[in-house]
Amino acid sequence: MTSPSLPGGTWTLGDLTVTRFGYGAMQLAGPWVMGPPADHHGALAVLREAVVLGITHIDTSDAYGPHVTNRLIREALHPYPDSLHIVTKVGANRDQRGGWPPARDPESLRRSVHENLDNLGLDVLDLVNLRLGDAEGPQPGPIAEAFETLVALQQQGLIRHLGLSNATPEQVAEAQAIAPIVCVQNLYNLAHRQDDALIDALAEQGVAYVPFFPLGGFTPLQSSALAAVATRLEATPMSVALAWLLRRSPNILLIPGTSSVAHLRENVAGAGLALSADDLAELDKVGR
Ligand SMILES: NC(=O)c1ccc[n+]([C@@H]2O[C@H](COP(=O)([O-])OP(=O)(O)OC[C@H]3O[C@@H](n4cnc5c(N)ncnc54)[C@H](OP(=O)(O)O)[C@@H]3O)[C@@H](O)[C@H]2O)c1
Image 1 (cartoon, helix red, strand yellow):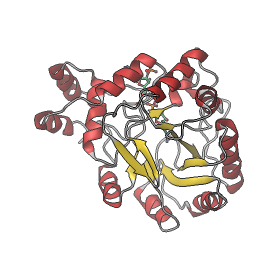
Image 2 (tube, protein in one colour; image 1 turned 60 degrees about the vertical axis):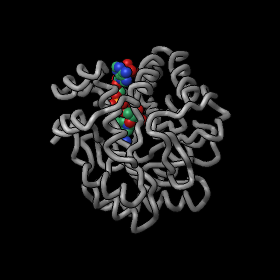
Image 3 (spheres, helix red, strand yellow; image 1 turned 180 degrees about the vertical axis):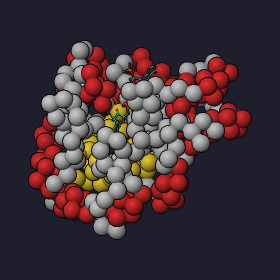
């Protein structure tokens, strides 16, 4: 494994040091995150390339496939390098039509933690995010019963650190009153800035913010300002979007998804793009 310094350097999640440039494994499953990938060996190659590039943070979930992505990670990378930290999430299942119904009752959460351990081939999960809300986004409501279930599993030694995903600021505060969290993983990118205040508040507390859909997810980011800055810098819009996120706040960790080794390399290189004050000012207007 080579370990060049990746754009953005590192961040510490609890006691775990990770590269701020991570990898989101969701795109490795089949279409709409259901079933196996069309190119099994290609998926393994992407995971192995992530480690070769020096990435030490992989984001996953047993809901991807379901079970497909975690088993690919195990096949590609087990036994894992000590430096590699796999972050998973629990709290949603998959239905026959590819939906993501919530599964946050204590029994479902306990089952999901054990399934993640089995499918990843681990005795302890480094970081588990409790996924809240629904496909429409965060939804208000109490989370104590679900979060306390994960805290109990943490106390049993099955989980090192906890986080939340798809959460409102009130739910973040509710969890923090029960036990420490090391990250929040919510939808955020250049064009979706609704978590700006939450990001700044978490930065002050030393808690990571991990934007999902950093490149727009299933709908690539589109903005004339983004296109203009990319053209001026002779870079791709994806590079500009990732470089902007790294500059947005030091507690932002990137987990862009791709099923392509070439795109993974492009994204790592692109995230290091230098943005001037003028570029940043132009980009800052996009999602406001
Ligand atoms: N907590 C949650 O509820 C939640 C929800 C969604 C996602 N996530 C996590 O967030 C991660 C990131 O989200 P995401 O993967 O859905 O979306 P994303 O990172 O915003 O975008 C991924 C899409 O961008 C394309 N792409 C990536 N690099 C590219 C490049 N250099 N050139 C052209 N196209 C490129 C990918 O296609 P190719 O495969 O062709 O490269 C893929 O279609 C996921 O992998 C998952 O781990 C979490």
